[in-house]
Amino acid sequence: MNMLLAVPKQNNSIKELKHFLSERKADLYVFPEGFLDSNVLGEAVAIIRKEEKYVITGYKDFSQNGQQKALVIDGGNIVDEYTKCILTKGEKQKKKRHGEKIGCVNTKFGQIGIPICYEIHFPEVSRIMCLDNPVLLINIIGTGMYHELQLEQWTSLARARAIENEVSVIGCSHFAGHIPLAYAYDPSGRCVLWKQNQYGGFELEIDLEKSKENPIGYFDDRTPNLFSRLAE
Image 1 (cartoon, rainbow, N blue to C red):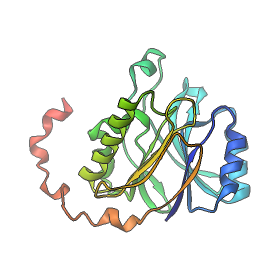
Image 2 (cartoon, rainbow, N blue to C red):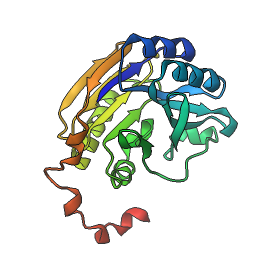
Image 3 (tube, rainbow, N blue to C red):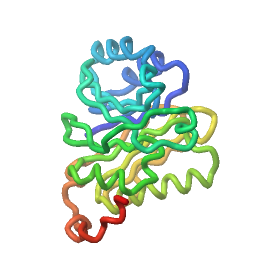
Image 4 (cartoon, rainbow, N blue to C red):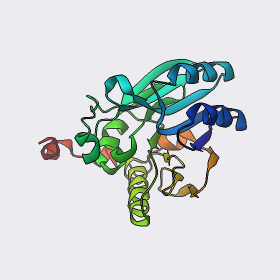
């Protein structure tokens, strides 16, 4: 599957959407957390319909106090969505609403897990998603990294999510004055894409079958009966 990971400029999502959809041909276009919002969704969907594209994008729902979601848009139809469940301290202080269920979205490529931004820091989120045997995990990120240590921690955790679940993990953020980023790790944890401090759309070929091989078989070696403390 050919993908385009977008690192767009903020505050002009319609212009950016048109630019990236027309820039290159891809099977799937991925945009970061909060790229679209309630004010522009109708226009954005119409553009995606006209261009006949398949898009996964972050979405800020102002009708739900800015609740962060991921939308799957197939040729102008919203076919599935996921709501961010793990919130940062800042989001909690702003009275943001969290989602009620962690899980994958349905796409024409198969199940895809979308840990939104901060959620990649929690192995439980990705592991629950991976119980559905997704072909891919997509970490849509907000404004990017605030400093080099955060960048190192974030991408190390994303790599760990790929290794422990034996699934490809990709991510992208906005180009917003901090450290913008697009990355990808294959199911073995090997880095196959790294774009830092760059604006643009970055192409990536993903072999979805690799996420089905599970050569190490971590899932088979789990002992869920011993993991009950995780739910306390």
